[in-house]
Length: 231
Ligand code: C5P
Image (spheres, rainbow, N blue to C red):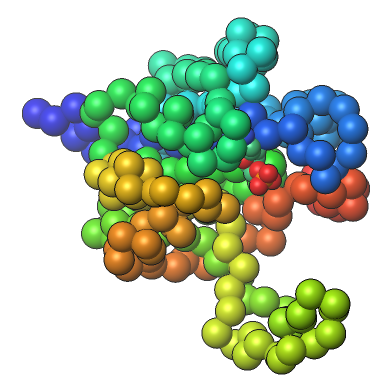
């Protein structure tokens, strides 16, 4: 018998939550800002924990807040979902690497999910996990780009218009076979804004699945206001 005879609980989710979130204005680290009276991180972890595939969540917290974050999240842990909190690093990439190092060895599928995407529905977690389980080494949720996108030079003058039909806005959770994510992080020399970017550098095909408007990234005060309305 394997450790996970069914698909339930065979996925570990890393939640980098150690960023300061300066674009949101001064105050607490972004993941600890309140949305309807509760930190963004609580919202994000609660939704991830509600996905039946998830058996373990590893949060990378600000180094000086590991104990406080662990105490805050404790009510969300259960016999079905193990919750671990580690100290994050100086960059998102370093925080993901720290969380990845803490994943118990029985988990062969690892998702990476930004705490800032606090309202991501559990169904999206399942969609990404299913695609990895179905044989894709790297999977990202994407949305079509609705704005016209232009490339500009250093003085702000338009250089050209990009064909938006071939563009996609990328969300999280991004899903990986564990060995793919481990190799991608081990090989990365420069900073990437997402984990799939590191897999791309290794030549690993990255599969896309439909994203969700609700998985919007809460980055600026306007996003927080929109999230309050969506809630
Ligand atoms: O800065 P950005 O908005 O891209 O951050 C995306 C996610 O990465 C956030 O959830 C943030 O908390 C996390 N992060 C981190 N460690 C850092 C910087 C960002 O865990 N040093």
